[in-house]
View 1 (cartoon, rainbow, N blue to C red):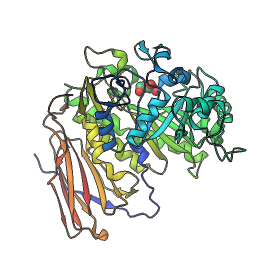
View 2 (tube, rainbow, N blue to C red):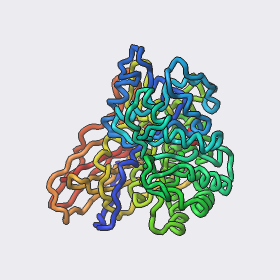
View 3 (cartoon, helix red, strand yellow):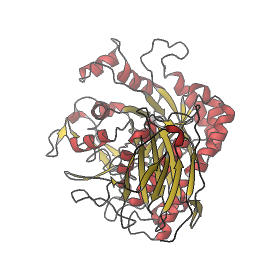
View 4 (tube, rainbow, N blue to C red):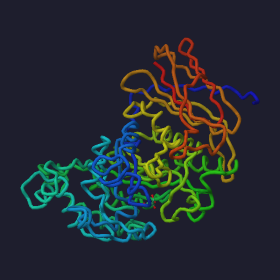
Length: 506
Ligand code: AHR
């Protein structure tokens, strides 16, 4: 390995720096392929160990990464979902065609009560997406009342007769999904009008006449895709007063071009594909900047959050699987995508207060892959685990200049970095090196912070597409990192190529 210049990193202590909301580490779980069925729900009679039908291995793995929030039931599925299909005795629930995802029969075994059982077993917050495009405000209002009412009304009593005395906790509700596309092919003007209409029947506690209402959820407007800032602008201008957040979807795709997403494989890719995907992931920075610029003009006080409620890699599906089920492998490259994206979210924590990787189990950039009773933790999962100290930690801005790498579509930083001050004290630093062979030496001056000890973990592997398979010994998992030393407040890190490192300095 040729010697490279040392990279000097300067922490910019800033009292005003934002707290990195733990909800940035959120998940998205849609009724899609084996995401819910198999991945989460196996049913009470399954041979796979479960609690009331929900897989114990999946719950334990998600608890271990302290999943803060799960978005459900879609995605595109949400705008075709009727909540009444998923309550009451399971054998009486209707079977619908899942038109978006392979035409697969949806037997509605996993509905409202099962979803809340799942999030409560994990200890996560619920983020429920309601149907706007093929439903009515009445359906939304009734579902909200069913979930949240504490009164003696018929809907609350129906919930009770279905086994749930106390209301469900619903901190976040999304009003529509991708309303510009699968959620109704709307213009932003049309969606804004619908949003205003839906918001009128939301009856949020504390708004207008609703001081005593049971519904305390934050209202999330369906947001833009990629660089469509006009959507954000129009919806913010025309409906911003009635929302608490607006969403944004940004997927990492081969050449950034939606129709070409199937031209990239999740494994067995060449070096160009390594660089291109990591370059595309790093574009999250320009995408956030573009939307924030629009939001800052309309909402300079940053009342409205930007929730990146779908993000992650989208490759061709695995050979032999249903193309409508979006099942893809997850490699060391995805771990780098996760670290790069999370490091970017940290820098934008003043506006980006939630993000939900797509999707939790068996779909797109998953945390977990299952096959029968076996389960694998993916490299992306391990990045989420290594990043635990960032949850609700105060951002510590850094100044540094990274060497650049060249991908087919553009240049990007070889080194991705972020740091924060966790509540328990000390500093946490995440570092990702996208180089194929070049290690880099970084020097971080932490002199002012009176720290004496550094420890860390590294995620790397020999091959670029190293991955873990359900039921097989792991190829990629974090190990003890020995490449960092702390001398008189000066931290020196030898950051190996194709690796993610997280350091705790105390
Ligand atoms: O995550 C898969 C799909 O991607 C979602 O259903 C949709 O919102 C997006 O287009």
